[in-house]
Length: 74
Image (cartoon, rainbow, N blue to C red; front, side):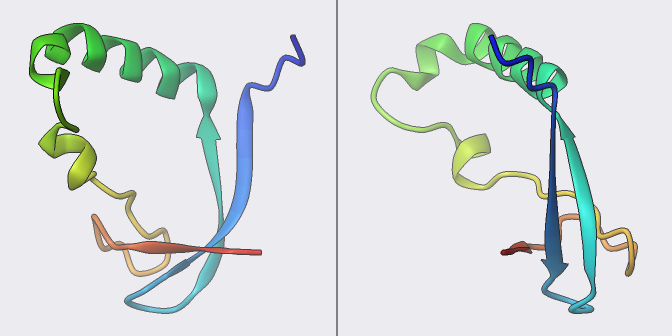
């Protein structure tokens, strides 16, 4: 309805503590979510999947470290 396609926010890497801007493409993320739910439907009956309990986090663009926890900066 409002045609939001991209979310932009400031984040901080827990390793290097540098702040940077991150963009998320909502259409891409929703598409991946639909595929995941369709594929894992039976396993999701009673509890969250391991992928949701331990999500793969994005790469820090400053330190080039994968799967670093990122803190959102308000």
